[in-house]
Length: 251
Image (tube, rainbow, N blue to C red; front, side, top):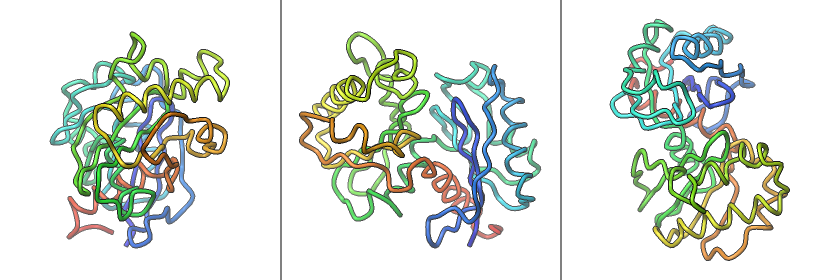
């Protein structure tokens, strides 16, 4: 069964139909740039462009980089403030003319990795982190998700962690892989002190280049691995959420 997933990020909006039996994209994804400013109407138009690219007519799962409860976006650290308090599910459903499910981006990626990827079969404490414009997080204990953790906003070195250790921070400050890995190591050590996970799963676009920095991660007791679904995990998780919410009518 195929269901459509869309992953909204600070830099790009990407989506594709997902084969939920295999946990893989059923077609090559379509990606458009996130508009700046990232006003809701402009972002919704980008989502519509991605969905209509495939001529899709069934339920759509959408991720958002912020806290999401009952389809309402509660925070928007790397998006326009107009998203805060918005019924994003209703707004996107109206724009697309289709049933829509909305959930936190890292939570969606984590659910996909636990079902099909690096977290599959792990019953202990697992933390997935998505490194991109910011740092998203998904925490699982015994396979159950603690939603909307947003651990990228923890303090690290006197700043929000994502301001020092995200992929964007690496680019903005011209950090070498070694220097960036030192910052990531410090961040992981802080999370390890707080949560004592058995496994860290590193996702986001940077997961495609895990060979450049994972060997440089130091001082972490937990296993640290790249996301098996790489930067498609959010799309897969979004489709899983849509399937769960709209199973009777899923295409």
